[in-house]
Image (spheres, helix red, strand yellow):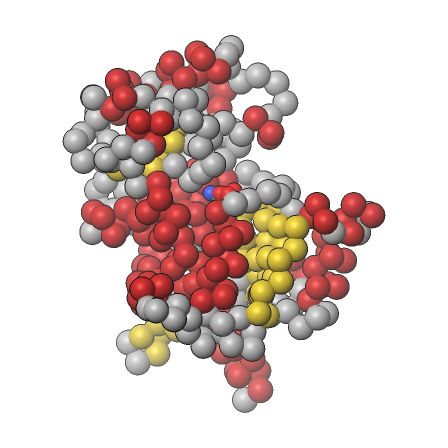
Length: 324
Ligand code: CP
């Protein structure tokens, strides 16, 4: 049981957020309700609530990030927590210190929540089994990026009211994308039909066993979908060349002004960032009327406030249960 029923209300009991694969639709909606409650804090003149006062949160980022790292820092700060910001480049990892030693040493300073991004799939789960603090996955290898999946679905739900029955295309480098996987789990649980679109060389192994349709033609899909989520080509994660040239990739799988003419008028254009303008998406589309790319970033703040709040609450609930 992921949630404990108490007087018809849910009590969140996950001390860690490692991925969306194991979450129920009910839990995802509970995070959205919590995020909605936090949104108004950002509209106040003093943008702070004392919710996590006295708590210490560390951002443990072993890979580069703009949106996720700053958003977690701001989310923690809005909830009045103390924040430590660790990046691999300026750390003792360069002297050979392991992930676990790094985490344990930082935890020894009295850290309550560890937010981790790591290139190795399973890194967040590994930490959750080896330290006492709450662990939030901010992206692990190709596996999951749960807060991105949540903020993407939250953005769609805010605009469309629900994901039920929507057709959503996720386009591009699916094979190397943790965003695609977290999107897939959350979107299908919330009732959407997900179509992975891209060249065969960028489809993940075992895609036929995933709860998605597959298409190798964006032209065939674009006119049918309500949402299109464009992914960056993750050259840094590749060995060889998955397509003959960048120009050819753009020709077949780029979201261009021309291709947008075939799309539904109210299609939502999404991208998790960072954008490669002119490669997977033309600037006119990224900045156009259908784009909700900056809404995604804005909504990420409330989602991350909700996640930090809920894992902390679950941890406090467990501590109380242990003492009684
Ligand atoms: N969407 C996303 O994860 O962006 P960053 O890599 O900048 O955090």
